[in-house]
Amino acid sequence: MGDDFGKGLYSSQLMEEIRSKFLYVDWDPYSGKRIYLEAASGSLRPKSVIEAMAKETCFPDQQGRANPGSAHSMEVTAKGIEDLMIFFGAKSGHIIPGWSSSHVIYRITNAVLSQVPGSNVVTTGLDHASVRSAVTQFAEKYRKEERIAEPNRIKGSIELDTIYEKIDKDTCFLAVIHTSNVTGEAYDVKTIVQEARKIKPDLYIMVDGVQYSPTDLIDVEEIGADAYVIAPYKNYGVKGCGYAHASERLAKLPHWKYIYKPETSWDLGGVEHQSYAAWSAVVDYLCWLGRYFTNSGDRRKQVVAGMHSIKAHSTGLLSRLIHGTDEVAGLKDLEHVTVYGMGEELSSRACLVGFNLEGIESTRGCGLYKEKKIRLHAPGQDPFFAAMLKQLGISSFIRLSACHYNTPEEMEEFLKATASFAPHK
Image 1 (cartoon, rainbow, N blue to C red):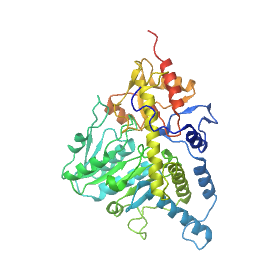
Image 2 (cartoon, one colour):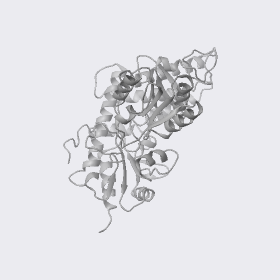
Image 3 (cartoon, one colour):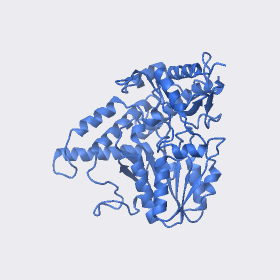
Image 4 (cartoon, one colour):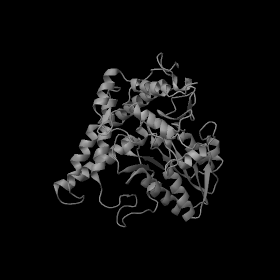
């Protein structure tokens, strides 16, 4: 076992309390009993989040009307925006809403590439399809060169120097992912921002934090990018919305907006206040969790404490997956398992593992886990993963993505199932 085995894991009592707050934590109406290890495709939701969404969806009142229901809707929205700023650790800037994180990414990319001078735009080969597609399409539309920092196939990661090599004085936009949704590796985006701006001081930079934000703390003031994007449905929230924190200068760029709204407004149409209510319920949950680790009454400090505990527990789960226990071998000791991009340092990674089983095609492998009542995902040549897998030289793989509501025992069940799939020699 590794030296860091077990560190940071929640106590059994707190684990029970956490799981009691989530819907379908160990079963669902379609599958019955199962272990849910597909958080990267959408996290489980706290009951309070769904209750908040349902309550506010019942009200028809539009904002800006002279009635109490309208005033309530505006208060809920303002509270949701405040809670987004708290989650981002933002002391300045603005919130950009959208129908999804992809929608937000497209709007930001379009605004920058259509308005900011420069002949090229840079992204990486491991960025999500939403970023790659937006960059490719708008670069073509606005006649800018698209430059892609390709990954090291052996390491399964992006070496930061390859990003800097693509940037020059004519680069107008850099889009980078914070955590890979293939390997779980988290990139040092603070350093990327700092080094990129040494080359081009006024460079606009967007960070895709969709995979990073559910399991580690965000501080946009420290990162220093112009935009940081999240997807609430992976952060214990609901689908149908996406948000970004934007710097003042990015928010002021000409963009799709109502003519008579403020220049930093990115709302289009009536505000969907119920999504903001659901987000506030997410932050309420994080504050509840954080109060186990801090005595502070400050909401941001509670979020910080809660997210630090989530990160510590997730790293403990990952350690168990990789190193195993006295009873069951970890992934690194299973000869029939190939893990992609997994280094020795686990603290810089999400509890997300991309792997394949010897002699078993990934879709079939995913089906074998399903028979064991374990829910995983087998990304292949679909619109979301095709470009990334091509960059890594992989046709398909199986992805495990756990979260802080998962238990060490569930990791052991996964390892036992994986060991049983070894070929007979």
